[in-house]
Amino acid sequence: MNFLQDKQIRYFFFFLLFFLSLLFLCGGILNVIQAKSIQNLFLSQNNAVATALLEQGISKDVVAQAITNTAISKEGSDLLMSIGVTERTSIGFLPFMNELQKTTGYSMFQMGMFLTVVLFGGAFFFFWKRDSLYQQGLQVVSRFKEGDFSCHMPQLEEGTMYRLFTSVEQLSTILQSKSETEHKAKIFLKNTIADISHQLKTPLTALSMYHEIISDEPYNFNVVKKYSEKMGQALERMEQLIQSMLKITRLDAGNIVFERQPHGIIELVGEAIAELTTRAEKEGKVILLDGSTEETVLCDKQWTREAIGNIVKNALDHTSWGGKIHISWECTPIVTRIFIKDNGAGIAFQDLHHIFKRFYRSKKSLDTQGVGLGLSLAKSIIEEQGGVLSVQSNIGDGTVFILSFLTEL
Image (cartoon, rainbow, N blue to C red):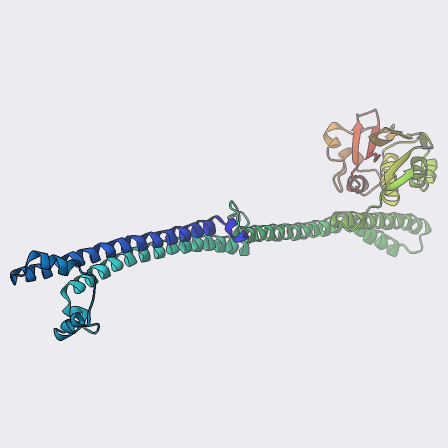
């Protein structure tokens, strides 16, 4: 009986058992009182009969025999009938029976009132406690409806009612989580729109200015060529910005499912830098690979390739002519690490903790390429796969980025 798990119901059930026991006890007490009253009636009536007979001069032996006699006869019945004592005679005309009825009725009334008070008192207390519990739950639900999830439903006991309260509490937690998610989504959308608007403002302004210059001198070949190239660069910057923002937005929204599978590191890194080798050659820089061709890493190939490419691109942005980007890796039974090291100027200590923020550009890198989203995107990609992206750098000693992935045995 699961309903007995509820402490209040269990106590009320025990109260009913107690009341039934009390009812039987009162019945027994009433039976004893009634038997005592009948005994007193019998003695009083026999005393009255004996007194009347003795006053008429009847001998004591005859009186004693009459009182102790148990036999009945027709003559006795006729005598009683002649004086009006029959089964139809009203109890009111029988003084001793009338007294017995009053005594018994009064005792039954007292016991009935006592049992009624006990029963209604116990039932009232149970329903009062139950109603208090309902009122408490109703107040909490009302707070939930108003968006206040700081209060909690009563959950300290067992029973169906408390299981219902627990379910309501779980539902409130889900609603709270949904509300917070929606609020964060609104803030995220607002910040994203603001970021995109802010970042597009500069290249759009530049495009407008270049267009005006070309419009003013449409026949000046050198001017047209110069500012056409600048327009191309601005458009390329806008394309990079939009593509990066779209990827970051998909990551933040949780719309990307990463398919982690073992891939050869040499193949993964080679594909990531394939489109950057030409740029490195033009800028007089070298990308070196150093690691075993047999090692593998557990990751999503497409997105991890994107992350590695962004980090290498960042290294190219911050190294001068003749710079070197050294990519190596090591595997242990626990973790696989990929190191991307450059011999650039390094990162100042005060900037080291901010480089993964979106659109962050240190004062020393304002004149470099990039839109300030590559490292942020790379970090999101690695961490969404359960990995870690860290950085070590000192001014003048270059920078090394470390991509760490757990190895599943």
